[in-house]
Length: 395
Ligand SMILES: Nc1nc2c(c(=O)[nH]1)N[C@H]1C(S)=C(S)[C@@H](COP(=O)(O)O)O[C@H]1N2
Ligand SMILES: [Mo]
Image 1 (cartoon, rainbow, N blue to C red):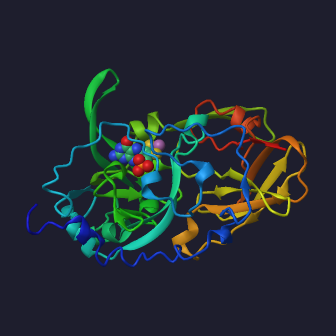
Image 2: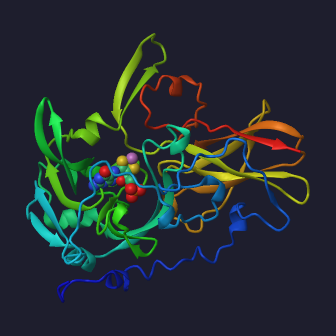
Image 3: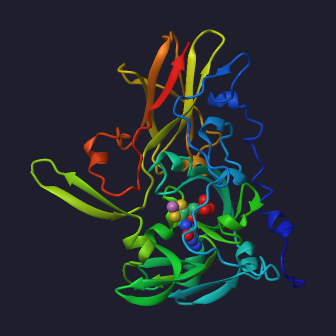
């Protein structure tokens, strides 16, 4: 490593130290998730399948509002780039090209000299929930980096700047219309979105440099959007004057859904790119409490829109409101995070029961049941936010 290169330790200094964990001191009981004294876990009869070789969130073990980086799922569609350890990480180059007044190449060291901030945000794969073995592809972490918007403004936007394309350094030859083209993993954002305060070029998660599998040394962070937009191993930011239609924007991570519209008998099979997160909740755990009640608890999130409610239904009973835990801070830092919730079944009945939760956000988006048209008419597996019915047996 050259003498000017930063070490992983340097990456931490100053910049991330301020991400001091106010959370660490916060008792989990405040979220209704910490099993208290005398509480007894009731295992679900439908345990989440878990492959120990693949990191993934294990809902039954959910005990931290911040997901440890080691427990975060990984999705990498191309062979992972081999990054020469001798050049990492400060010499990492990132190119800013296209419709800019001053196109340039910066190093990570340059980026780290710019203002930086930490945003806590839930990262979820667009395919999460598509099958029982892929139900833990999400996590809530603290991301530290430099805001993209102010950097783009400093590089000078021009009248034609419209769309911002992000390229990872992972590459593969793709067949497009029967011809072979070398491609890097790429996704785009509209310029308007790229300028939002929460969009970061990030070099740290939970106060530590990114792990290799999560995009070391630099990735894009797009709070409120599905993981596919959070390009890892970022090496180029290219500004276009038109929409970008690469594979991960327009051919994969495309939802086909039949939608009917009021006052017409038209069903529109619309194709849309997987973008902002759906409104979703998961029942992570059931515990028997010393007073005889049964507490269900879990997490719920949306795309940055506040949650209006989380409700729980037991068997054929009515939807009943759960208590949504307070977030540890206000404002941008927690706008894009999940919330923990709990519901106490005061007079539980012995026998087997279905338990299901649903989240509703302030825009009125309701997490649908699997058999509702919105889900039944979804022909592709992405954006699978259907309610997850859990099953328990009480003695
Ligand atoms: N360069 C690059 N970035 C990428 C991907 C990829 O394959 N290559 N996968 C995307 C997808 S589909 C998801 S869900 C997230 C997963 O991030 P993680 O592996 O850090 O959890 O990264 C996104 N960023
Ligand atoms: Mo994904």
